[in-house]
Image (cartoon, rainbow, N blue to C red; front, side):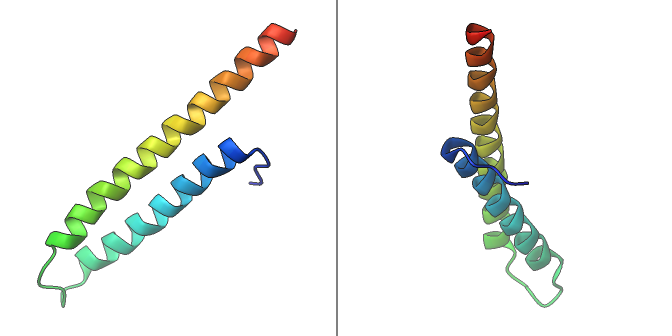
Length: 73
């Protein structure tokens, strides 16, 4: 998916980064050699919050564009 608008691009990139970090955290948690899982759990929650915030930002952008289209129509 290619997003050209900067606000939408930042939101999309935030979601992508969060999902990538969530995958890394999940691997750390699943690793039986990792005895201290505290940091991975904290990072997991932070990255979950990042994805949610980025998704809300993207939704706000989408709502704003929808409103502008309605006004111009």
